[in-house]
Image (tube, rainbow, N blue to C red; front, side):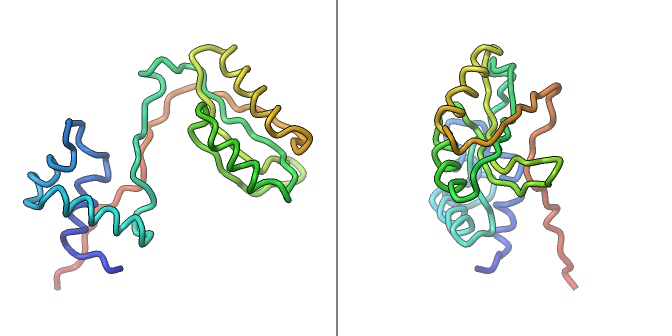
Length: 164
């Protein structure tokens, strides 16, 4: 799929997020002189073709009261990583879950799962639940706790191109 000028305008208008309105696609449509349906169709086509990876909310967990955040890292039996990663990623308290390569001998972990809680006890309970789910396939784990808020943004493109 080729990106045309209209797609470029949609990407530029949405790369910092959808408008925080009751009808974000209509708000975009009004800004770009398109219909809301066309915006949704084009975004869907770009997602399906891989031009954009995802369309989703990026909540600020701190503003929602979730002040305890930990990236859990797990050393999972390789043969079970896909199946167990899917299960961990479906837990309602896991916001991100993905596989990464080990960096032996210093870093034996290959499954990462971000958890959020309103208290340390809540996060500890979530970690225990993941550990129980992984059972004997868990060869070790650790938790990397957040110590400060980082600006959360995705890829930004100036979308500039030569007009010569």
